[in-house]
Length: 234
Image 1: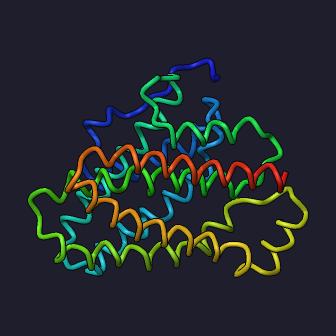
Image 2: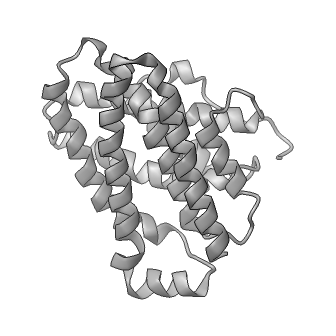
């Protein structure tokens, strides 16, 4: 762990898309310095997607831009809390995010695994909870189309994301350089599928609050599969 206290922004003070982008920039610079390198690829990818959403709002891509900004802020707070809880070694860190730290113990693990573990924790576990909080007094069907529009931005961001890192595994590195569609498309379509399931799980959670345990259990199982794959590919 680094020898200085990280200057995390108070989560309660992150209230705008601009605040989210600013915190992601800070983390891009400081994650490795404070011993949280396992979040580095996910964070840089998060920045790419978030700035894509930011530009889309400016381009009038969404029908409900105010809601999308509120959604992005609420969603990002879950991620920032996971980073802070990890740095502080807090017992409040959720189990799906804890799996990202398990990845960090395997120094030869493929880098893309850290991205998938972060995405799994954030989408499979956090997203249903965020939707459940935000949608209490909203017309969910009217807003669903804008949530779905983010999927297109995610897919488009994939090509930019894979340019930000290199794999040390020779086979993965070859695929990444020469057959990008085989390397990143399965991952991006998996993330898109997770988002669909997260929406369905939000509906279940809305009807039955105790369903949160099933959501967490599923997220942990998915993470364990990616950790197992990480061991095979190491």
